[in-house]
Image (tube, rainbow, N blue to C red; front, side):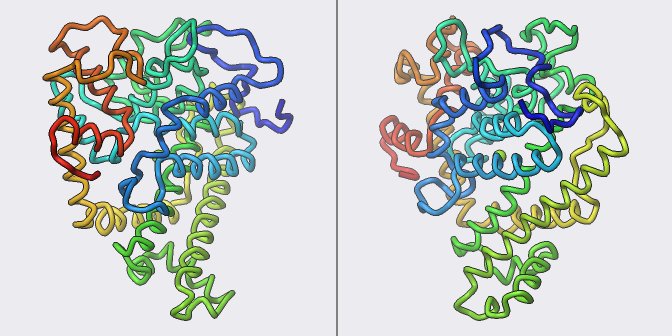
Length: 399
Ligand code: MG
């Protein structure tokens, strides 16, 4: 047991529990078990072949959902330790936070959402929860990974009121009489600090690694990124300590050193600002945390810097014509797949890796039927989706 856990941290001994009660493990806490269950899931393994920003097959050196999730876990753990939060829970949430992503990143999600317009839509966050609650089928007694409330709370980052209401209807009755994971979106309360932390660690991770991948891909230049205050400060301090980094043949090293400093600056800022907010609010339990305003936060200056960086990436990388062209193809693949499986459900394996679609009683043409197709497509890796697309349409896109 972690002796140094703060009173406002999630303590596995005080967990609100799992959907299905299980016997305690002899050597591991409940959050360690959550983490282990996630690492052993099929959805986690598939993250290796899912796009973060650059399509999976475009190069072996770019981030995938898997390496992104590992970076979020690393950053999250390091902040958690400094704030005496529960590292195991942070790691579990970080490793699971993107399990519901479709192939081809946000383009895939947008296309699937449009396909599902009449059947409840598609949202990757909700899908991550669906994966751990339902779609992983590996335990004899129940569907899903049966994670703790605290891990599930962290995974469900956003949720519309309508979806939250629907979720609450199927949540178990908790011993403390409080609602389930959808409740906070109806009551406008906060999640645990571990969950708040994963959200920010996600942002720190992708802002930094997208600059890295963007520059190395040649789609954005180091000079362009140096126009941003947050990156230029890091570059200037790196060159001040190591003047040789300004030489033309040292630009790769300069990029890495500046990114390292930029990451550290954000992490230290997050720790200091959060310590201050926690000291002021003095929450004495995770229940108090949930009733407090957000306590994990950047300083106003860092918030501004991070926003600038995000806007820059949006404009110059995510909307780069070369990225957009691939994304249009990706949307085509997902849309074609959806239509093909709706028209011919027998093209989907009877027992899919997602399992649930095959076991759900559903009528052809019903929303449940559409959801089964959506689950199947969302679970695909980039390369499997491209291969299936070619098999079903004869067209070769992104393969
Ligand atoms: Mg993420």
